[in-house]
Image (cartoon, rainbow, N blue to C red; front, side, top):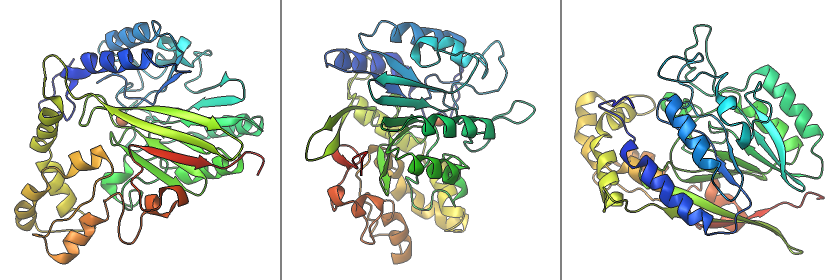
Length: 361
Ligand SMILES: [Fe+2]
């Protein structure tokens, strides 16, 4: 694995963390496992082969999709796989047709999983700056959804579809974590009454809601707070609910105090990122001023990643303090999490019970 000096990801814990998570998951009576992309650091063929092999040993089925880390370039090199190769590694994990980089399957009676590919490349094979679903995939999806009447639909896509940060789709730093054609996808999902989206990429714990749709984005096992989730879907007479429990890897043999270590690791690497946030729109602060404020924001991203955080920087001028307060899970003006009836006033990023709309309604 290429050791990038400024990497944000604590890749050293990758294997012990996933082993610990899988150990726990195999003790539960699970129906399936979803991995919404960023399965490897730089699309290394050895690492894809390792994961496919490991997933094949599980007592329950697993389904994957590609993240930007999994296919760094459209075409294979000696160091990384290309888009065409990805489905071949994961034929047992969703890609029964390895010639197509997206898939659908009925994973349980009446439950349909749709695995999308949001990686996009230019003619030279370089990755796009945002996620995108090409017209061919959109047409395929429309067809799949039109045939899925009466089924529970689960959609997995690597890039964010709903905003998880204030004005994420408007901000250049936030945009790159989103699908550039999210509105089109949302229209199709609403028409089909699809209510559950599973995403990654941002590597934070956040649940965003819009109308009947919930987007559950889950952090990464190689960055603070090293989370994974266990979900329980219940269809009862009174209501259909999705109970969400989040778990964290807090220690591995080489990092006995992983939570503390990786929070510091993220803090150590967040300065340039915070300077960007302060100097770019909408704040546009002069660099000198930004440098003054950056130390207070040392744990800002770690707290975002943890989910359910509130932000208050009394040392900042009121307007700046207000700006950062908006990133809190529950803001005075109310972001999406505070407006849903079952989440009113309660944090829902980590532990939650979401009430879903009945399909017949
Ligand atoms: Fe990603």
